[in-house]
Image (cartoon, rainbow, N blue to C red; front, side, top):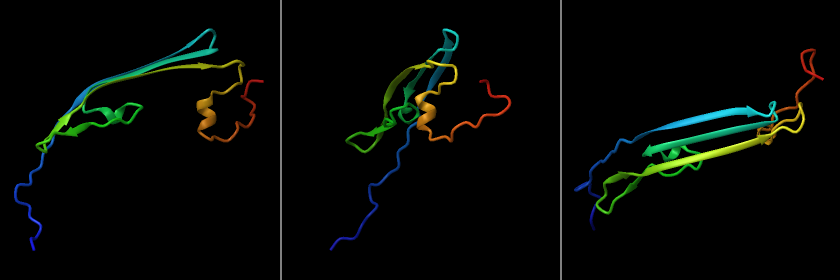
Length: 104
C-alpha cells in the first residue's frame, strides 16, 4: 500500500491585467438610452458579463492566462415618461409610492 505523497508538487501563479470602458447616454429627449461596455486583457474573464475563465492549465501543470475581449451594447426604450425599464422590473423592486415630488 502506498501513502499519499507531496513529492513533485508545486505551486504556480500568474498575473494578468487589462482595462474596461463603459459609456451611457440618453437620446431623443430621454426616450432611448444607449450603453456600451467593454473589457480587454489577459486573465480578466471574470470581470465581463459572461463570467469566462481567467486561466487554463497546461499539460505540464503550469497556468496560462487567457487573452479576452468582451463587449456589451444596450438599447433601452422608454415609451412614456413614467415607464420603467425591464432591468428595473427584473430587480424585484417595490412599486414607487407617489409623493409630492413625483411628476404626474
